[in-house]
Image (cartoon, rainbow over all chains, first blue to last red; front, side, top):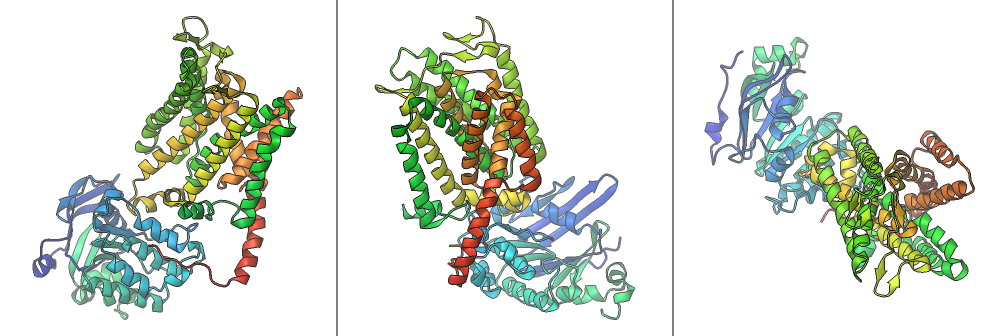
Length: 259
Length: 355
């Protein structure tokens, strides 16, 4: 493993410690090590992209962070609290929002009902009063006009946007997005990138798992590259995407011209 | 109050608007007027066709709206029936004996469902196993109660009675009023109406939306911050208490209950009523339950041994040709036309964002 180029951004940004932190996370499925001693820090207001080739362990890492899977060892710390053994819904109530790789809004409910379902997820709302990020995204994605429509009638990209709005509805501190622009046109992808960047500038911490290099270039400051279940490289986006070894495992030779 | 009416008229069941509700009021009036033209025998029969509706509505809520199929709702039907028989029978000398019986029966159904449901849902039992486990619960109870013949199997003065069941169960008495004949008919009509209205408000309120969200996508709902286990347990208990309501009404009707009320045949029937009607419409389920109970009753009281075969064949046909359910299917067709016509007339619907 080549970990030499790890740039520890946590030291630079500072300010009350990381909002989400993973310590030596391990997960294996039978003989496959899907997650191997992953250390990870996300600061408040940071926009982090996680990239890596297929099978690099991105989805497992995502599932470990939000609590869909329990780790074999290691810890997950959300806002200074050890949440390793908390079920997913409790982590969400503490201030984690997320969307899935495949679109999973509730198709039988209307847009308004989807958002209402997201808003009222628990009586004990931790940061629910602060829905500034939600209002910003809801306005930017222009969903108000479709409020009364069943979600199944929305076009694909608006469904993705609706899911982002649902994840933001209760004012999370950290937003985890798994390939939020999958299936979008280049124009829609870039627009989504703009909106997410604005949210990040307004103080939201984001982790985006993404394949689309153009998108990553546009939004990310720091990029984490996963390979074979562990952190292969981490650092500023322009440094990472120029590295030859990263190109070889991730971008591939055929993409060199484009990179 | 206005909010309640709005929820009652909400979109998650067939039928909306002034015309529909006028029809419902007329229907209720027709039921209330029925005893003036019918003998007490026919009124009691009609009450019998109606009394399973609470159990069917509960299963519709659990399965159609919540996506959890229970094949053993009759277990709670039987628990309520037997509990009522034991408590009301032992307290026959007291004026409030039968009321205590009702309370005990509903508590027994609710608590046993809470205990059983806790292991189902907090144990994260896979969705397809739930029908098997609930059916096993019903069959275990039926088998156990079948073994309780003899004088040694008694609670207080009441014998459980083995396969012959418990007989001589007293009818509900409030003050000087005994709920028999016409009074029983009115009681059943009132309870069915209350159950329908309450559940229709429930499915259109926030809790109902959460239920449908869970049906569509368990993980997504959990990751919005919902405790899915708790939501499922809650609706399981509600459905089981409703099954208990039907069980209570059943023992009022016949003054007896036998273990076969929890047997395999009886366990299958609620699933058939709900599936044939259309499981995600309370109204369709209520109508189908009424009609199928009437059909079964008429077929079997005419000496026809094949009532169950016919009802079973109906289920197979529905699953193959109208998996949404016959009544819900017909209803949707009708309302779809109505909606389209309306949408053309009014181009933009109400646009209220989540507030």
